[in-house]
Image (cartoon, rainbow, N blue to C red; front, side):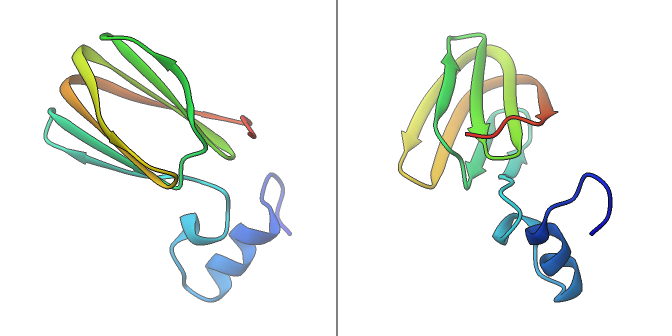
Length: 95
C-alpha cells in the first residue's frame, strides 16, 4: 500500500470503484452555493447557523456559510441548505 492510504483506497483504485465505497471517506455534493449533500457520514460534530461540521470517517467536512440549516439526516446521508461560503476537508478524523 502507498503511504497514507488504506486498504479500501487501494481496492477501490484497483477495481475502478468510487473511493467513498470502501475507503471510509464521505461523498460531498455541492449544488451551487445553496445546497450540500454529505453521504457516508458518521454524525455531526458541530452545528450552528454559520458552521456545520460532519464526521466522515477519514475526513472531517466543515461547511461554512450563512443561514445554514440541516434539512434532512439519516444514518448515511445529510442535507444542508443555506448560503454556502466554503467547504473544508480535514484529514485524519476517524469516528
